Length: 288
Image 1 (cartoon, rainbow, N blue to C red):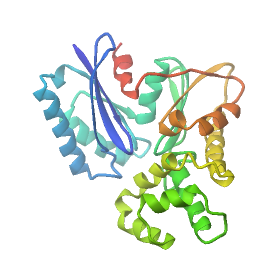
Image 2 (image 1 turned 180 degrees about the vertical axis):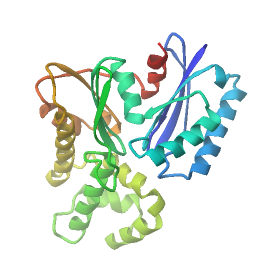
Image 3 (image 1 turned 90 degrees about the vertical axis):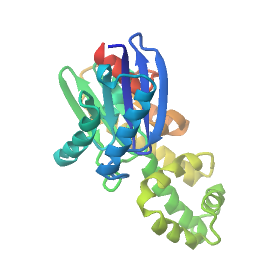
Image 4 (image 1 turned 30 degrees about the horizontal axis):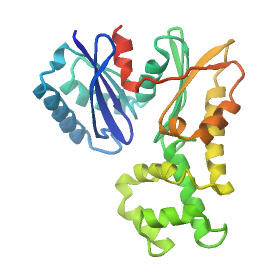
């Protein structure tokens, strides 16, 4: 086996990264999301086949690679898992599949025990303890995903409506959203929602990064609340002494207010592990 292929298939995009047997990154492709809530299973299959074709034209032998997929939405629902497996195994028959959060956890903590909290488009926490694995959250944006980019974006939209009609003072949040969607009146946001319903989850999640610099207290409180929700996820695990914890996802890696709030409210037994490996590095760890 000369190479490892790690695939981080999140809710917004998919990264395909190739490593050599020493763990060095050789190259990486960023492609569209293959999340089953964003594309049909048929389109997922076509996208995977196209990626395989691209890699093979670059002289990579897929069948000789150690392939690991981390997939958003690959969770407890048996029917969804089966449908995802059918598409991936049709193109990458020897792939190892896991949730995208577990992929990132493996890259961050290796094969050691610990907890991993991820807040990207969605949110979830995993714990590994010996041969047992446990999880918190990950119920999806329609039910939970507290502290995630979508959760933040949805709350920011609610604040936008209050700023629009005077229930809150207008801030840069208002002007940012008006300019982002080229709105003539605030009520035009209703048409934006209806016209972009198929991409609703993604563009709402994008607001969490777009509006992060607004320093109004009621806006900053949304980010603080996100940090508290993520701390609650982590603290819901029963710990038996010192436990390693690592973080992943765009919200925790890019927003200091969310991350600092989480850290300040963590169980005192947690030992924070700084992670500088991409989630796709889990392919190297898995085959070590």
